[in-house]
Length: 238
Ligand SMILES: [Zn+2]
Image (cartoon, rainbow, N blue to C red):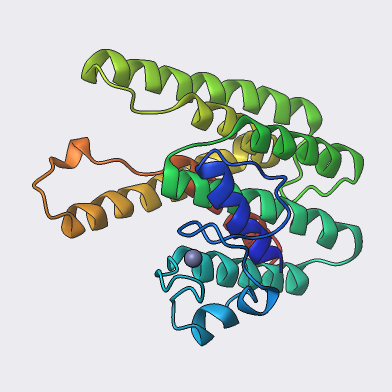
């Protein structure tokens, strides 16, 4: 159910559509989808990836998002309990939405960053869910420091290559993520996210039909920053 909510939020935010429409509808023929054709994962398999209304293909994006949300909820349930389980589940929904919107649309919406920031403040400083034992002062300093570093790298790239290499969304995102990691874990997080991004670039260069120079390929860095934060939080529970 949460996976289905995540998938429709990603689709609607990514395509600038209202989040407030209650019923799911087919993006091809605009017909409302009956609940029995809208069961997460199962409907995709049962309908063999085709819509019932107009026989258009259902993008693989839906079952991928629904399935990965389910897996992450299972890990949360395994690693956390009580208040922490609720907080970490809300956090993972926000991070999965950020991951997929940046992955598919290269966008990081401010509304998601605001929710992420509010949840971060509540979790870390009110409920003391602190996976890396970071103090308030160190968290805030690390946040300012990391935003400055990423912003300077972005500016530097803009001057050298005359095109935007790092969006301001990434800068704001790292500022919030740094509140979780503090100075000691931030470098590890940056290394993991960068490795993911480099692998992404190599795979997309192998898959692209046109000859694109490696330096001109893009990777959704915000996606990999969010994913790395979740991975490191889980590793801290081992
Ligand atoms: Zn249709």
